[in-house]
Image 1 (cartoon, one colour):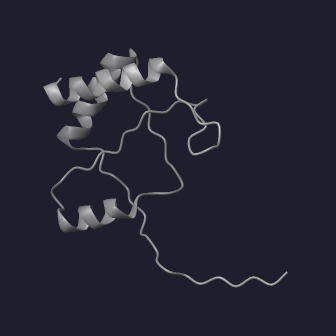
Image 2 (tube, rainbow, N blue to C red; image 1 turned 135 degrees about the horizontal axis):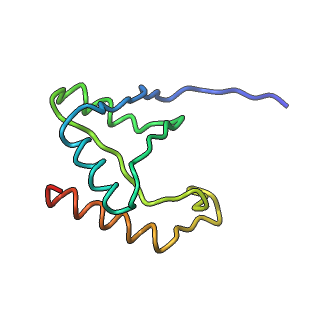
Length: 100
């Protein structure tokens, strides 16, 4: 088979800061919601917009959070999320916004 690839666009990786007040507040909110310290997990991909925002607003803290757990199979045909995960993340966000 012959294959040709044409690059239309590229995105730059994003690495968030973990030493700011918003990060610390999110970690505290997650610990309260989940009952254990927040863990960090690096992912292979990133959202290119985050790098653009970080370069445009260098003082801003950018936090990416989502509703998923190990069995969620995110982006798979049989994707689903446990209701307990949805509830815990909703509580996390409420605690974060309240200024936990």
